Amino acid sequence: MQKKIIRRQPEQITASLHANPVLDKIYSNRGIKSNLELEYELSQLISFQDLMGIQQAVECLADAIKQQKKILIVGDFDADGATSTAVAVRALKSFGAQRVNFLVPNRFSFGYGLTPELVDVAARDFQPDLIVTVDNGIANHAGVLAAKKTGIQVIITDHHLPGEDLPSADVIINPNQIGDSFPSKDMAGVGVIFYVMLALRRYLSEQKWFQQQALPEPIMSTLLDLVALGTVADVVPLDHNNRILIHQGLRRIRSGHCAVGITAILEIAGRNPKKLTTSDLGFAVAPRLNAAGRLDDMSLGIECLLCDDLQRAREIATLLNQLNEERRVIEQDMQDQALQLLKKIQMNDQSERSGICLFAEDWHQGVIGILASRIKDRLQRPVVAFALGSQDELKGSARSIPGIHIRDILADISVRYPELIFKFGGHAMAAGLTLKRNLFDSFSVAFDEAVSRKIRTEHSNHIILSDGELQVTALNIELADALREAGPWGQSFPEPLFDGVFQVLDQRLVGGKHLKLTLKYADKMLDAIAFFVDLKQWPNHRCKGVRLAYRLDINEFRGKRSVQLIIEHLEAHEFS
Image (cartoon, rainbow, N blue to C red; front, side, top):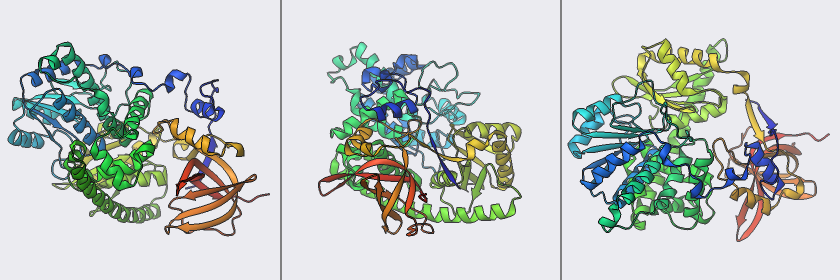
C-alpha cells in the first residue's frame, strides 16, 4: 500500500516551552499547551482519591493483611499482567502480608481472566480468602460468581472497558467505570494496581500499622520500573499521568535501581540500562517477557520479575530469550501463510474488504495477536486473526487502526447477531473474542460489514505524520540527545519523526535484509539505516536520491558517537 508523508500542522506553537525551537514545534504538534504538561515529578501524579471504590478496596485489603488472610493475585498472561502481578505481590509483602501467592491462567488451558475453571484451581491449590485480579476481571461475571459461592472475597482491578453489567465483586477499581471521576482513563493494568497500592500504603500508614509492626514504611517509587515496563508494553495512550509513571520508572532503571529480572532481560537483549528509552522497553524487554505467556506459561515471566537473585534471574532471562526466538520463527511462518490467504481473499472478492478475518488450523494461539498487528499495519485495516481453541472453538485476537474502536465493533456485532460471538473484551485498539468454529465465515462477513459502517477513507490511508524538515544545522548530536531525553515517547505521544530529500552516495545490504545508506544533505554527510527493506526494490543503484521519513538517532561505535538517521519510510526521488 502506498504511503503518504504529511507534515503535522499545530494549531499554534506555544512560545518558550523549551529552549530549543525544534522541541517547541514537536511539543506543539502533540498538543502540549503549557510547561506543566512537561513536568514529570511524582508530585504531579493525579491523586488516587478520585478512583471509584478506592476506600472500600483499601479497607478490604488492610483487613486481609492485619488478619493474615490468604491473598491470591490473579494476573494475565501478557507483560501488563505480569508486571501488575509483580507490583501487587511485592507491595503486599512489603506491607506485612505473609500469605500472598499469585496465579496466572495458562492461555491454552483456561483462556483469559478469572474463569470458573481457574477459580476451581485457586480454591483447590491455594484456598484463598481474597482474590485480587490485576489487568483482568471486568468481564469475568461467571468466575466472580463462582468465587463468591466458594466464600472467596473478590477485588477486581482492571483497565479494560466494562460492559453494561458489572461482575458481582466486593469492589471494582477501574477508571473506565461509568461514574468514575478519575481523569486518566488510559492507565494500563499495572498503573491501576499501583494506584491501589499507593492508597493502601497511605491508609496503613495513617493507622500506624508499619510502626506497630516495626516495619519500614515502604517506598512506593521502588516499583516504578515495573509500572513503566507494563505501561509501555500495553501500548496505552501516553497522557500526562502515564508519562510521569514511565519517566520515573526509566529514571530508576537508568540509575541501576530496578528489579534484577529487568536487569537480566536487558543484559541478554544487549541494551544499556543507563541509556534506556521507551523503545527499549517496548521492543527488547516486553517481547521476551511476553514470550512466556505466548508459548509457555507467564508464571516464568512473573518469577523473573519477582526474583531477587541475579544469577537465577539470568537463568530465567535465558529461557525467556529462547522462547522469544522460537516465537519469531512461528510468527514468520504464520505471516507467510496469512499473506497467501490474503491473496486468495483478494482473488475471490469483488471488492476490497474493510475488515479482515484470517484463520488457519495450525496457527499458534499465543502468536495471533502479533500476527493481527502485523497484517493490520500492512493493510491499514482492522484485522482479526484466529486460532483453534478447545471444544471446537476459535480464539480470536483483534487489532485496529486509529479512528476505529475495535471493542465497539465487536459490541455492535454482538447486538446485531447475538449467536455469533461467545464472549469478547478489550479496548479501542485491541480486543479478544471467542466463537464457534463453524461460525467463522458468518463472523467474517459481519465483521466486514460492521467495519465498513465506520471506516472512512482517511482511516485506511497509510499516512506518515512528520514533524517537518530539519535544517542541516539541526542534524547534530546535541539535538539527537535532546530528543532522547525529551520523552517519554509512545502511543498518542509519538517519537519525533522528520522528513527530507537526500542525495544517495552509497547503499548496501547489512544482515541480509537491512539497507545501510550514506547520504548527503546540503554539504553534510550522514549515515542512515532502513530495517527490513523490500528486497525486490532495494538496493536500487539507479536511485540517486531518496525521500525519507526518519528519526534522528546516535550511532555509538568503539567509543565514538555520530548522528544516524533511522529510516521509517523510504522512497526513490528524482532530482529535477
